[in-house]
Image 1 (cartoon, rainbow, N blue to C red):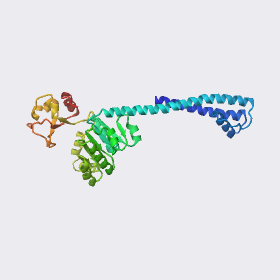
Image 2 (image 1 turned 30 degrees about the vertical axis):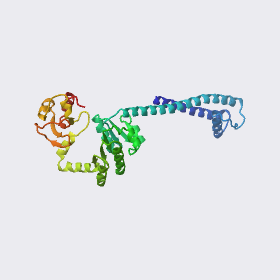
Image 3 (image 1 turned 180 degrees about the vertical axis):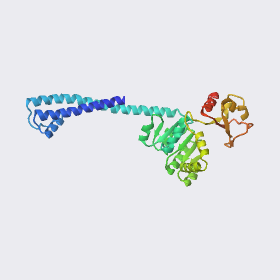
Image 4 (image 1 turned 90 degrees about the vertical axis):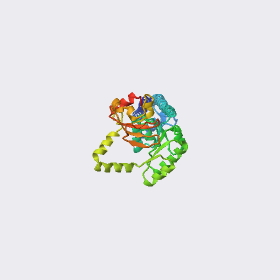
Length: 335
């Protein structure tokens, strides 16, 4: 609809220009006016402002003036109606779009709120999208929002304001990722979010080492320093390149490249009787290998024994090729 109206506007503006050119050339040829006089006569005629003529017109010039007035009234009226329709249609479309986005956000629960859509925020959004985890992005730059609003739910505004966080459903959210480049702003976001949702799991970015403790004190559960991680990663590629490349392959995201999966024990116990890892027998059933176990209290066990007793609130970390992970998800209806 908007595209159609834009083409109409181009057509209407083209007709207006043609009318003006027609009037200027007509007065120049029929009344022998100078170019300035012809432009002046054309403008006062098509706008019907009623100023006096440059000099008396002969019958041919008068007939031309009548024709120019009638033509310009219809064309200018058409142009005004098209422009008005475009403006009203655009505003209506924006209102409907905002209402639709608000309705979708209001329907979310246990989702992720991502603050900032810069480099780190965009990477976080891409990973969440790959794993089909619902999320909302808070961003203040309107141009950024307009470029990506077709694929991502956005809330426009500052993430350190209560109202903006509430619009993003912070009270119903499970996680918050604060990826704003400024440490002070991240600190305010963490403080505000923690006040609005005591159970929220908050992950914040930090640029300075001194900020890390402050963010944790403010309520952040995890603090990530992208620059430090990047430097460590580059140094590791020198010291043990093959191992790091292998680890990168494991953590690649995307629908067809998932090699790791985190599964809650309840997903298994709801469908089968199992008290230990041996009872699960995932290697034979799906080809996947259990490489880690997370106890309910958060303790990690790497490469657990087959006789390890499973607890209802525990989780297993599973390694496998993409097709093996898909088989696991399909067999136990995970995700």
